[in-house]
Length: 113
Image (cartoon, rainbow, N blue to C red; front, side):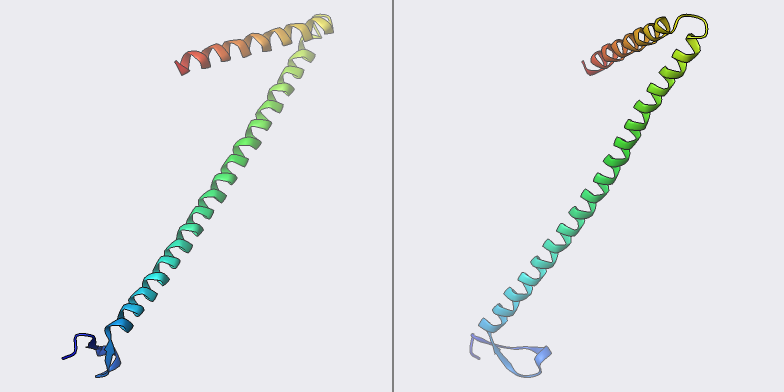
């Protein structure tokens, strides 16, 4: 029997050169690698899309939280202006907001270390 030829059961009793079989293996391997790369790219794209969606929602929530705090400060100023002069109410609310922001920054710095 010639060492360069081999019988293939799926092609019947025909004899196929070993080089042709190796070419088939190389072709199939390339196809598998290409398919795996396409799958990896599709999965990465889906994960990035999901991440962008989550970041967008977090950003929108942050903006709404800031707007809510500003509106609460304005409501507090209006409430205080009924018992004191308006400029005093604004000054008191601004001072309270500043002290709260300093306290939060100090707490964040303490939590980091």
